[in-house]
Image (cartoon, rainbow over all chains, first blue to last red; front, side):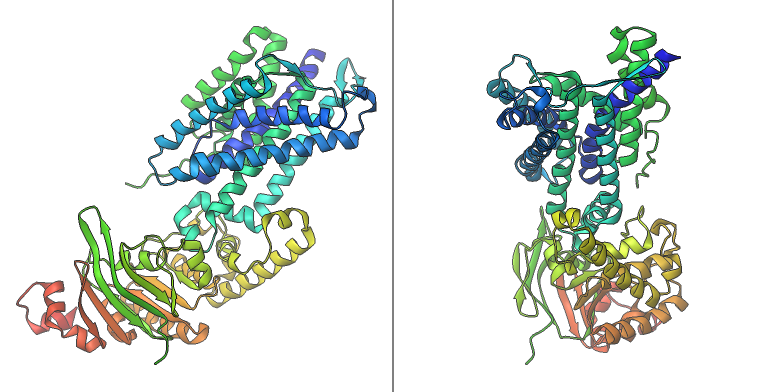
Amino acid sequence: MSTFLQQLVNGLSVGSIYALIALGYTMVYGTLGLINFAHGEVFMIGCYIGLYAAFWLGYETLSAASFSPMSATLVLLLAMAGAAIVGMLIERFAYRPLRGAPRLAPLITAIGVSLLLQNIAVLAFSANPRSFPSIITEHRLEFAGVTITNIKIFIFAVSILLMLALEFFVKKTWTGRAMRAISVNLPAAKLMGVPADRVISLTFAIGSALAAAGGILFGLDQTKLEPLMGNMIGLKAFIAAVLGGIGNIRGAAIGGLLIGIAELMTAGYISSDYRDAITFVILIVILLVRPQGLLGVVRQEKV
Amino acid sequence: MTTPALKLDNIAKIFGGLRAIDGVSFEVAPRQIFGLIGPNGAGKTTAFNCISGVYTPEQGTISFFGQSIAGRPPSQIAALGIARTFQNIRLFGDMTVLENVMVAGHATISFGPLAAMFRLRKQAEEQERLATRAYELLRIFELDSLAGEFSKSLPYGSQRKLEIARALMLNPKLLLLDEPAAGMNSREADSLKNQIRWLRDTFDLTIVLVEHNMQVVMNVCEQVHCVDHGQTIASGEPLHVQNHPAVRTAYLGADVDESTLRQS
């Protein structure tokens, strides 16, 4: 029982990171029908921005214990802002010129952008793994044989907070409504006065900022950073988005959490060797059984 | 002479080898109800798409109250005050009736998305204002009781009305109606005629409509322009256009009996 609870806690914390990244995939797919394969790299870049921001804010000279919560928050915000800019640049220079091109063109471009960013990161940050500064001092708490660290609670809380903020934004603000209108019918939305390019740019900014937040939380949890880290995690987050129903924001959140839990349960009960494999098993099963995803709806193709 | 609300001057739009419209010119006076007619594939909807910015014409100018608009992005043209409906309804099906109308209210919003995230009170006030106006429009079209329904679940006739309500949310000066009578029975088409005049008077609009239902066109339009194969074949008062030999040939082929035309 305690294994189960322990793995559930760990799974929720990993899963909420996947969920944050999955939101970016699903938002971009929702508005443009494009799978942004460069999203995992935005996550990675967010991570590195956080790393440098921490040093810039004086992490090295201070001990971890005295790095104030204020500075930690600032690291998070800087990473989010930096990644938002990166996301907007990617959209502006890689995808916007291909608006209206056949669907395969932006997809291939996305893979190209992903490789480009990986290699720029190798150049800029070196291929050696770096360790993420522990900007929050870890405390362990014990409940009924389950160990919870304050970092895991922090990860979960920040993720949920950001997801709720996004839900509010999409449901209640004009811009969110415009995003949904674009996702239903881009040409009609433009004709109703929606400045589509600006809204799409903002969609990339928000998705990228969430990925960067995921990056910082990941760094706090795993501590190891390397330029190719966006590959596997991006793929898993993409699968989370597919599991939840790509294009569906709540679906991405639920998909992320489920993938996280499934991974950690596999690690706990079978073997951590299968931890990555289970995600792909889930992908295969979902594509066979319910290709539209848990919360997705089948879009009717008109003939 | 007053500035025309809409003026097309020698417009051409070419798709590959097809000249969908080829040198079409017309003027619409303010507060006029103007009919654009022609057989299927004549280029009517293409003309609408050029006016609303979906297409950029290869040749010619389009001006809206004297301001050149050809080639501007659709959202800008919409914000200037040109709203439209669609031949095949294009509502945002997965959004509620109220939200569909509110989407079109952007042009009246005065602050950006960042402010929306941080200035929550102002954001809430603005939402309130948009919702109030959207409700007013829904009430006019007797759709207010359906405000919370998904627009895709509405019956066809209500969807057409909702499209008009959404277009009016843009506060347009010019309304383009693309086949408003499509799929209506003769009784519905009858009441549509009055509704179009009433729209013009109530919202102080200039209206251009593309329509196949000749009863509606002849009855409601003050000026009619007929195109075929992308070119103007007749223009003027409804009766004049109706009796124009080129128009008859275009619609019915050469050599027809007068009575056939009267019946249609």
